[in-house]
Image (cartoon, rainbow, N blue to C red; front, side):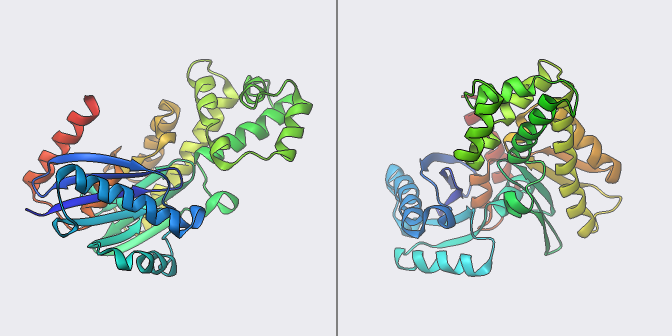
Length: 319
C-alpha cells in the first residue's frame, strides 16, 4: 500500500500528515518554518526533512513507500518553485510542490472545482474551474492583504489615533491598542511604533483585541473594522468566482485562516456579501486542514477514502 505525506509549510511552522490511500490518518509531525524566502533554503530543507523523516520513522516506512505533496508559502513564482526543487533534488523524495493556497483549495474542494479564500496574517483567493486557475490578491502587506489579520491590526492602530484626536467616534480601541503594546500613554505608543516597528505577526495578532471589542463590548469602531475586513475578503472571493465564470450554479467556496475565527461580524458579513453575487455558492470552512489538502495535491482519492478521511479528521479534532 502506498502512503501519502501532506505538508503545509509557512513562515511560522511546517505541519505534516501521513495518510493511507484508504483515508486513514496515521500521524502528524510539526517543525519550524519552511518559507525559504523568509528563513533561507537550508532552514527550509531541514524542517521539511524533520517532518518527512519523522513521519516515516514513526510508522517504520522508507521513502520508497511514500508520495509527498508540499503546499508551501514562498513558491508562488515558477523560479522560486524551481529553486526549492533543486535544493531537494538529492533527497530522493517523490514529491509535488505548489503554493500553500493550492493546498488550501484542495482542502476545500477535495480536488474539485471551486474557490478558496485565506484570511490569516495575509489574504488571498485562489480558484480552479475546468483546468483554468485564478489567483486574486496575495500581494503582501505593502501592496495588498486586504481583510487579513495585518489589515485589521493596522486599521485598529490608525483608528485608535483618529479616535484619540477626535477625528472619529470615541472608541475603546485606543486603550486596547496601548494595552496590547504595553504603552502607558499615546506618546509612548507613537515612540514605540516608529523606534521599534512591530513585525507583521504582532500587528496581525491585534485582531484578537479588535474581535473582543466588537463581539463582547459592541464597540462601534471595532465592529466597522471587522465588517470592512469581511467585505474585503468577500471581494477576493467574488472576483475569483467571476473570473472563473461561475454563474447561476452551485460551486464550493471554502474559507480558512484565523480571521474567520474572529466571530460573526466576519463570517456572517462575508457570507452575506458573497451571496449577493453568487446565490448558489456553498460557503463553508475548508473540509480538511491544509496539510491534508497538500496530500490531495498528489491526486484524487476514492469517494470512500474521502469519506473515511473526513470522519478521521473530525475524530482527531474532537479528541
